[in-house]
Image 1 (cartoon, rainbow, N blue to C red):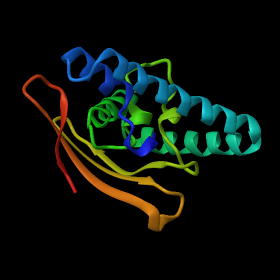
Image 2 (image 1 turned 45 degrees about the vertical axis):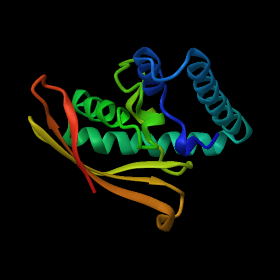
Image 3 (image 1 turned 120 degrees about the horizontal axis):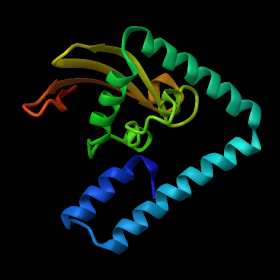
Image 4 (image 1 turned 60 degrees about the vertical axis):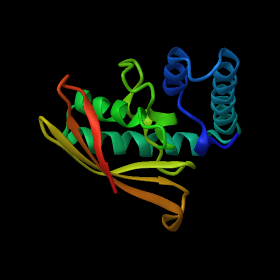
Length: 162
């Protein structure tokens, strides 16, 4: 299955709880997620130097994001984006609420599919995020500008996507 069209684990579980998919479909989706993770682990073992360089790049990108925003704000934005069904990078953001997972693990600077946050402006009730994701080459990347706002429950929800 193409990772670009694979729903994130939290979406699969939400669909299963809501009765939209069967247990077999949920397990098959989770199996694909697991195989995708194993494939990346195998790639890291084949070339540990590249994996280390990617780790350093992502740590630097996470430091840049945390320079202007708190980690709690960033994780809240990541979780809101992970709830989108038609957002391929949700596969890498779905567990952003787990505080034991470091921030740099959600970013992908030079590994396909790339996931970069080029601009992030978070205020109390709204947030504006510019994201690049997709291929390594700039021409093959999707660029989206997403505006989020707090709903009546205080949860950040996507208001618009360009």
